[in-house]
Image (cartoon, rainbow over all chains, first blue to last red; front, side, top):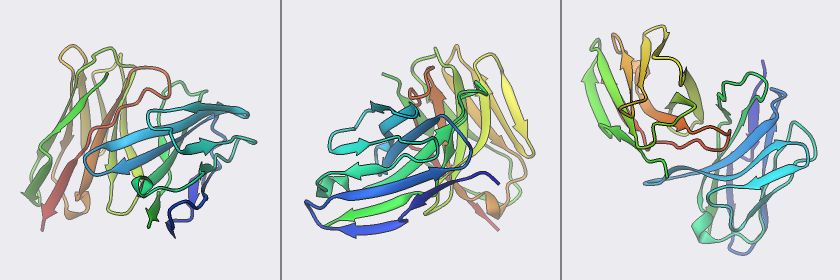
Length: 114
Length: 112
């Protein structure tokens, strides 16, 4: 079955370190997204990509970057982790071809920045 | 800016009850609306997606309705079961794959 996987599922790091969260999907979807989920804020969009070599900033992109070198992967990098980036991060994907916009999510990566 | 409100924030019901979860949104110019389920420590699972031209969608014991003009959607769960316990989120999209706004959810507990 097609799926979307995130790694690591749990990560503890220190302030100032660089962290990369991986997202891999086997749906062959063009569109991929990174969200963060925090109590009281719901899910907020960090970055998104509509295809290879395409990346765009979302609502809360400061301190984060992404790159899209192939269809399957959209890694999220925190260049210099801050305590405010402690959160649960979700990767999602959708197909451009079905025209429904239905989103499919990974299981999430819980990041703690000390 | 689209704002999404889900009421109630939490709900506890005995097993077997029929229940309704409410979602309201401020911008009625939506492309579609998706209902998700989230279990603790897990990702979001898509339950139902309603296109803007549709009034409702059904899947098993779940029925979602959409009234764009009033900015409302409801998720009806028939004959609730303990396995339905989870947080339910609605997410209207204003068009463009990135323009999805999530509600903060309704946490449902079904008591055996």
